[in-house]
Length: 131
Ligand code: HEC
Image (tube, rainbow, N blue to C red):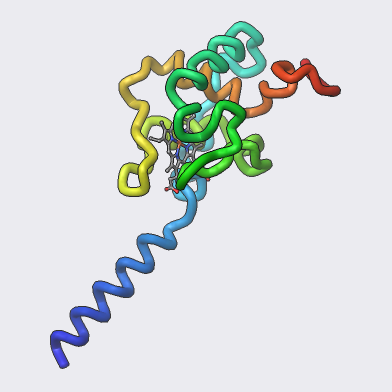
């Protein structure tokens, strides 16, 4: 019976951690307060697009639509995530589930990627509403 209890505890823990929510949902509330020093900066957005192509496109797709277990980033909750929450996700990654940490990139480059992620795409496609 003891063994059964231990197995059950393990199962419950495993399910709980697997259900822990997406990386963005897991980012701590205090991370949301960090401001992006490059918010709205067009040159930063372009630099971010290049960095995205180099660092992220292999998993999240060149157009951000995701592939394999890497989720699409073309989602409202990603566009509306605070820059600080995205910064937290990029620094910490989600190692167990295959999202690497980008803590090795300089802060500036991570902020550039975030300017791009949070709505820079329109300008790329030239669709209405482009900035
Ligand atoms: C090796 C593949 C891989 C690379 C490279 C990668 N990611 Fe991810 N990413 C993932 C996976 C897998 C997840 C899902 C992790 C999870 O669910 O815990 C993820 C999750 C995310 C999330 C969280 C989405 C959510 O729903 O909370 C963001 C944001 C993100 N990635 C952005 C990026 C950016 C920006 C880059 C480039 C700097 C990047 N990723 C590079 C695999 C990758």
